[in-house]
Amino acid sequence: MKEHRCTLVRDADRWEVLESTEARNVEETLRKTEERLRSLSDSMSEGFAYHRILLDGIGTPCDYVFLEVNRAFEQLTGLQSQQVIGRRATEVLPGIEKDSADWIGRYGAVATTGRPARFESQSQILGRWFAVSAFSPHPGYFATTFSDITDLKRAAAEREQLLAELQARNRDLDDFAYVISHDLKAPLRAISGLSSLIEADLGPGMSAGGSEQLALLRGRVRRMHELIEGVLQYSRAGRTEAQRIEVDTRKIVLQAVELLAPPARFDVVVAADLPVHRCDPVRVGQVFQNLIDNAVKYMDKPRAEIRVGCQRQGGVCACFVADNGPGIDRRYHERIFKLFQTLAPKDDNDSTGIGLAIVKRLVESWNGRIWVESEPGQGSTFWFTLP
Image (cartoon, rainbow, N blue to C red; front, top):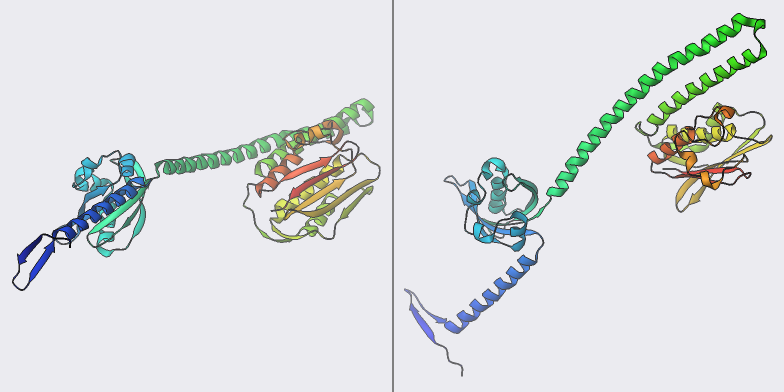
């Protein structure tokens, strides 16, 4: 039979037998539990600290004492456990009342009410931002876990600053484009008017060559005017606030065809199954209009065909504008969507090289995609995805 040494303790009402072996077992169990908890705490990537709240004379939280911290606490704050254990926060972090006045109030509310909380706090002493979670295991005490979010905060602040600078620059560019276009259009109108006056004054006395030169001059002035207007459209493309409504895209295409009024030799076929889609009718209308106008402008066949339709591709609605024009070599499939890029001599068709760049910018404004399928002599099919 196992023997136990016992200690008898006299009480006013009763005798208690304290068994020393059982007491040692309890102590050993507590020690192992503490070791496991310590190991678990030190394995955390988040900082951990355990505190006791201190109250002033009228019961208001005024400070807190560090009772326990883990290794991540030391790594994140740069403070060693021996610097903080048993000490008040105002001793470890002088100026905390001034720099982070809400900390003690929030922690005190957690310790006295037992309601957990999560918030972001900044310590000017440590110069870091922390996302903090606090909870109270029992009244008067609270624990915190926290992670360093300083880099995230700085990145967010830099992003906001960059966005503000970008918006300011965009406004400056808008103003610049408007002023430049206004200042350039005025002399162009004057040149065009003067050329007409010269031709009228000379009348029958003007040679055929002179008349041809004046006509060429007016053509260059007109192309310059269209170039300025194209630059304005490009600068604004996709930057106005978009509206999203249910739109019958077939009606949009028919309106674009009616507005462009292609010559009689053009046969324009618009599919009956174009979708009713939730999109910005102005932007989508601009895309269709530019693509159809592009097909008309570059057509080299006496009998021209333009087809407009759509297909479902992987759950996305892709529209197309196809023609039987000259086609485009694969080498230029990317180049044609860049600003001021055109494959035909500019004087042949008054091309500004801006139309497809505007189309690309509009499509990308709703996170869509645009591409061309074409071979020389086999026509072209321009595809774009709807929002």
